[in-house]
Structures are given as structure tokens and as C-alpha cells.
Amino acid sequence: MGGNRKVDSRPEVALRSALHRRGHRFRKNALVQVGELRVRPDVIFPRPQVAVFLDGCFWHSCPDHGTSPRTNIPYWAEKLARNRQRDELTTSALKEAGWVVIRIWEHTPISEAVRAIEEKIGSKGVAKCK
Ligand SMILES: [Zn+2]
Image (cartoon, rainbow, N blue to C red; front, side, top):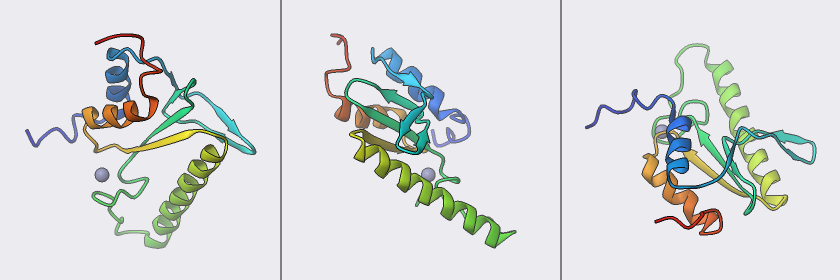
């Protein structure tokens, strides 16, 4: 209770095994070419084209935990701003290419993340399992 922030230091591993347990078939770290852009979502579902990104709170400036480093401020401000821009670019490029994009903060509970993904992939991706 309350102390599970550091334990889940590999959120993408936890998410993948949760999806796997629920019978979903997906690919991890697959390279997706969208126009000029090469994107590597954390998880993709190829049939309904769904790309899932697990965004780190710090690197992607989460509104709840995205802290600003206190040293080297201009460097970090620029770096984090670039990350945000790249996220937006990636998301819109994928959407234009017909992908459904799901971005999940690393602090999101796995059950919630799975639910958000299942909302998008629907029953198509699931082999009959209850
Ligand atoms: Zn966060």
C-alpha cells in the first residue's frame, strides 16, 4: 500500500505480462515506419492497428510527477520540450497513417492501462477467453 512506486520500475514488463495473461497477442518494440518517421511503440497490436506507448513521468513531463531538474535548467527545459514535441509528432503521424495511439503514463495502475487498451482493441484481438 502506497509503497509500490519504485517496485514497478519496469512498467512495460508488467503491462506486457498482464496483456499476455489476458490472452492478447501483440508485438513489443516493433519498428513502425510512418512516412519519414521510424517509431518504436512499446506494444503494438497489428490487426486493429493500435500502438501503445508507456510514457515515463519524467521524460515525458507527466502533469503529476514531471519534475523540473534544478540544475542545468536550460538544457533540461529544451530536452524535455523536444521530447514532448516528438511525442506529439509521433502520435499525429501514426494517427494519420490509420493507427490508434494510446499513451499511458508509467504511474497508471496496470489494471487501468489494460482496460484502456482493451477499450481500443475491442474483442477482435482476444481469442475467446473469459
Ligand atoms: Zn506520473
